[in-house]
Amino acid sequence: MPAADRPSKPMSHASEYSDASDESLVRQAQQGDTRAFEELVFRHRDKVYSRAFSMMRNETEALELSQEAWIKAWQRLEQFQGESSFATWITRIVINICLDAMRRNKRLHAESIEQLAEESGGVERLLPPTQVDMLAGLERAELRARIEAGLAQLSHAHRTVLILHEFEGLEYKECAKRMGCSIGTIMSRLFYARRRLAALLADLKEARKP
Amino acid sequence: MSRVFPWSPHLAVWWPVACLLACLASAPALCMELKLRSQLIWGTNDPKPGDGKCADVEPAIRERLSRVFKWENYYLVKSVDFTVTPGETPRVRMSEKCELEFKLVDDFTLEIKLFGEGKLAKTVRQSLQALRQGELAVLAGDSKEKFGDAWFVVISQPRK
Amino acid sequence: MTLETQLKLQAWLDGELPAADAREVLRLVERDQDAAALARELKLTRQWLAAGETLRPVPESREFYWAQIARHLPPRESATPAVGLFASDWRRWLAWLAPAAAALVLLGVWLLPRLAPPQSAAARAPEIETPGDELGTFTFRSDTEQMTVVWVNAR
Image (tube, rainbow over the protein chains, first blue to last red):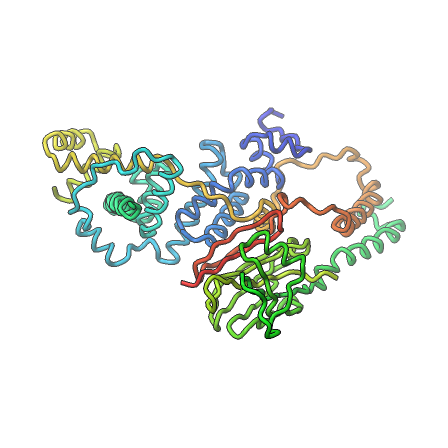
């Protein structure tokens, strides 16, 4: 039997799991080893939950959807062939689950005022562009906190397009496919989201001035 | 000799033993009911009022609260012992404005709903294993009656 | 600038513009102050977002989070066939081993919770899960006092 087809030797000690690579754990899990799968969950749970929370902005939903993502990953383990990292693969699963949830709750439809804003180019289109890097000099953690605060104020649709494009690195076409809209809509949503974020961060800086 | 799965005489010894142990193992799940205690406690820096409406909080809980929170005094306003069984959602009235509803979601989780003035204020889920091991689940907030004071609803498993 | 031009400028920055359009946008940015200012802002926003996101830890213990998942995992059919060490005699062995093993496992399931020492507080977090925020709340836990607190703020 070729080496690649031989079943992996089962791991017997807890340390073997914690020392094993993701690929090795996936192989074990594909053979039904739930302990290997548990190790994968332990390693990547924060990233998966974090992505769900960033999209849904609700702790309960994020917990449920992230758990649903793990269950789906277990069911689809054969489909993971190693073209991307396991972390990327499971993150894509949770993104799709969150997008489905948003579609069910109609959260991907831009609210009417914002939809009008998108169509007309948005109030932000008329604002003078921000020229000053108001976040310069901030520690990374503080910068992330400010970004988080700004993102929290965007609508689901606008936040999602930023997450998919900026954090997940998806191209316009892929964003459009996942969000179920045209590339043109992605472009205008992204534009609106970026300008709105810049305006929000400027306001946050003002609010924090003594 | 039969090559079918062996229903042989020595199994007559093992299977009843296995069945008995199966019953013992599953007994807690089949008969699960949860005894709980809910205590409404007032946190304040004021001395205990002399009207007799408050009692002393048991020392173990008072000490745990005082190590976490800033108030000097903790007084027991009301204590209720009750039982939660699967399929039922008992409601416990702690005060005129505060009610709690309990539900065993599954073998692992207790759901607690806090109602303030009749409206659902908060839903919380607590691990049953943690409760059985002495954990306190605490819902708390600022007192509306007296600025600076606080109320605590402490849910625990009463010690036998 | 029209919206269409602004979106082209954005696409140029994102590397999504065909080469011919990209050259046109570059010329626009070089000669038009408004276009240059907008490009600077969009670049700044990308720079900020490139700092990454705040990683948010799962607000449940490892055990509790896994338990919620494990309950729903259907059994997987193993890719590997079972290899029997005593393949030729497996029925004879099974007659004794199977019920004996089953009885021992059940004994263990019943006995172990009664024997296991209490877990350390760090290993056994109390897991308060908050399925919905009807009011502003925050949750914190004290490991040393074995207490989880949900502080309810009325808005």
